[in-house]
Amino acid sequence: MKMTSGRAAALGVALLLPLISGCGVVGSGSGDGGELTEFTVSSPAFSDLKDIPGRYQCEARGGQGRTLPLHWSGVPESKAFAIVVDDPDARGGTYIHWVLANLDGTTADLVEASLPDRAVQGRNSAGQASYAAPCPPAGERHRYRYTVYALKEPVPAGQVAELKDSLPAIAERTVGWGRITGYLGQSADS
Image (cartoon, rainbow, N blue to C red; front, side, top):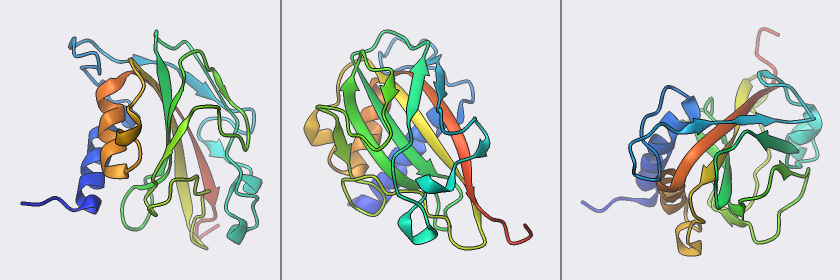
């Protein structure tokens, strides 16, 4: 049976969801069967599980569509980092807003509205190799997860381009992860 790119991307998401859920994942990209190291991800723009400032949402909702500033600490030894931004509350299932791979292993910050040197953007759920700012539908409140993965080695460029390839490639190289989650939008009863 031939796997469609949508189905393959869903499989990649399924492989990464245990990593981004933080539910006692055993096993690592190093293949040694050890537990993944969980580290801290923060942002000067908002606190974990709080509202993300509206300026970071899409222009269609009155925002500027900029990437959030992020900081991570307590990471295991790694050769590279990857960042995946997703919306688990999207109507059609988890929506990937951004895949950014191969940030230098000495990096500890993502500057607002910047793309680090030599980092590679993979395709998002819209099929674009770019950042898609959060854009919750009117009357809906969504969670947005910013997950940083510490990688034992950079992801080969050919495995970053397509969403169906990038998520499994990141998962198999992950030695640690951290996440910050924020909310955007208004619920119908707000």
